[in-house]
Length: 144
Image 1: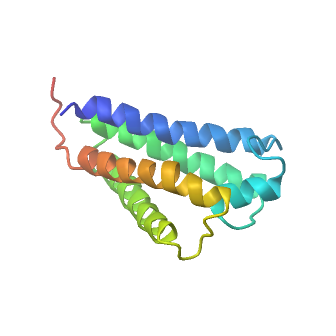
Image 2 (image 1 turned 30 degrees about the vertical axis):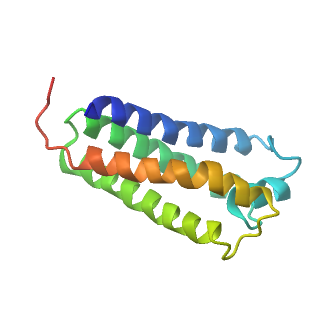
């Protein structure tokens, strides 16, 4: 298995998520028509898309991406492995919640969130949890 490539893919997903949050930080709401619709589609509840909320998310996503990338190359030591493991744990928790919502608990099948969760959010989180766990389990020695 090519761990550096897996790490790069995982980091790119995290950075794409960070870029979306940066975009929403500008006040734009694409692909939704307004903040309320965006919030319901992304989170399944209404939440503010303000700098106070979005800036920390962008920072966490960026730090997670950096840690996963560094760890996948056998560098960064224990701190990078711990942050990568935290990415794995966090996305695993989100994947488990996604499965609950898919089962119909807390999410209405008539909403955009339900379908986005079914076909995008939960599958991506399952991939991310698996990939980050594989990267975190890599030992510190650099491999060609």
